[in-house]
Length: 288
Image 1 (cartoon, one colour):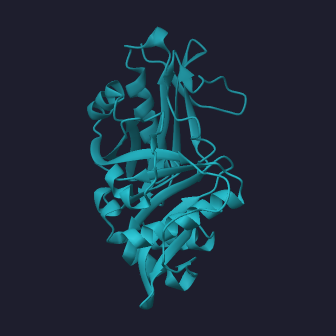
Image 2 (cartoon, rainbow, N blue to C red; image 1 turned 90 degrees about the vertical axis):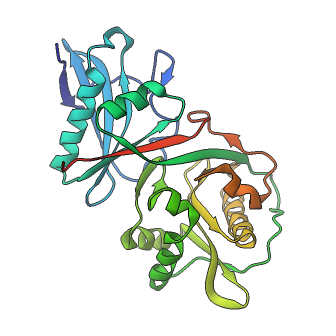
């Protein structure tokens, strides 16, 4: 028998992030969120037995996450019911595509997504490293600047031709949520000083590397870092300085593959504990 799915209010009972030892979302998913969202709760005779979070991340893009079902009621199709209600909510707000990311080792969630019509569009690794106190010792020799708003087209062109965005089908992660790269998105990141360029010394206006990042309280989160090896070293030095200025001791990096970070010469990258084998990003066309 289907359960009732309702929008959760401020005082609504909801399942915790961790249910029966399974983490439905990473520890930092709310702290790193870039936009508000909606929580849906599954009620069985008034008891919360499932939940899912939905965010509208662009004009026509939605993201769902933190799907969880209580072990007592698994096998009743509640997970699929939550996904369908999340899709209906996204359509209500004008979304034409829904995406989510799933840890590569979570075969149950991957199977649920496939049955619901979702198809893989990208893969990602999420790794982290500690920031040592004191000056950053990064071997780089390239001028670094925060771009200006009028440089948005040039920055966008550079990003669109990076191996990272090619591997990610022109999607970029902000927090744990991927969305389509666009001029408006890049302009906003530039305005908030969340982008840095390494320029070519011989051609001072031409970028050779770019980094997009955020600075939540307990980490610096790198959404994209790509370019020439010297340029990547240069902008990573800027990231380390941002971490030290904020007295942050952790840098988390999203990358299309771990080998792409080799130019940074970091001694140890630790896989993020929520997705030690990486993420699979899946999507579904809601208009079909």
